[in-house]
Amino acid sequence: MSLEVVEYDAAPVGSEYINKLDELLENENWENALKRIKSKKRVKVRPGLNDNRHLLIPLEVECKSEGLGRLPIHTALSKNAPFIVIHNLVEKYPASLKVKSVADYDFLPLHIACAYPNNKAIDVNRENVIQYLIDEYPEALNYVEPANSSTALHIICEHQPSRSLTKFMISTSNSLSWKVDEEGNLPVHTAIDYLADSTVIICLLDIYKNSISHKRKIDGNTPLHCAAFNGCSERVLLKLVEDENVMMMDVKNTSTNETPLHLIFCVEKYGKKFVNETGKAKNSSYADVEFMVKTMLQRYYSYQKNRLGDESKAKQLVVKLLTKVKGDVSRTIMMLINICNRSYRLPRNFLEKIDELSKGRSFSYLQQDESRKKIKIEQSGEDEYNASTDEEFSENNQENNEENNNETVIASISL
Image (cartoon, rainbow, N blue to C red; front, side, top):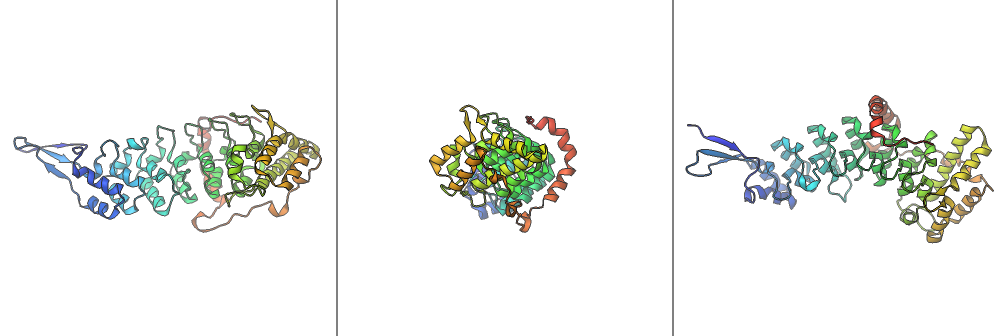
């Protein structure tokens, strides 16, 4: 008579057999963990002398930890384990890529790889692991975690991804670029908020062009609002205000009725972005306060002049922009500039010129400096930025963008 085999989805909780691998992974003992993953085989045991069944004990890689609900692969990914460890875990238990971790907000392994370690940027090992996980289970890219409705792209934009990895994820699932999270953030909002590399932000803007005018649900901020509030590089700013995009400067958000220029001079944030007296950005790769204001006003003036065919009316619109009231507390941009000056001492030359402009006395500040009209984009290695490539990629996915536009754009901008 043949013996009945019963497969259990978890080994007896608390046994040394299921805890040893977790312990090795938790302690980042990669060498011994790898040996254990490779050596362990499925075990059959008889529960008792008078029991004709054989229990098929799962491998350690298939067993969730007590309390945390984590598989070994979840633990390994949270510790940024070497690629070879992750590869062997997946080979032993391919279905683990579809298993959510209760301890990690119901993240799939891909989402954990994108999120952890949460205080570090994406390194080469982690990037290779993420690409491998996507190759093995690309459907994970379409999974939206339940806590914040974030995709893997939202999560990775918080951790300084490379442009090549960002583009790889979107090329595998092109809808990622226009999916919003619970707060209405597109991936580009998240990238700007978390100070992602300029090439990543510009890549996201090029691939999904409607993102420029997208107002997120939580506060109505467009990407330009986010860049003004958090700071950004010169390249990103020029991209955000090129051509008709500059009209976003005239848009107020929904939380405080502020334009992007208002947000540059948010008193609580200014000192974190710029150095006292000089106005230089504390982030060395970012634009200083004068470049941000001057560029935005020059682009705004140039666009309005071309649109209206009237220099005088265009200048009036610039003055009006500077003297617009800030929603709830009735403060104009000039009032905020003066408040910031009292707290942080803004550059004197900048203050004098912007004051003259706001009063309509001098418009020399609107004359473009020919040497700074274009910021050359440095090209190096795999992160070489090529706008034409991203635009071509965008065109190939334009039909999908248009089909999903009504569902994904939370609010359209009316100027």
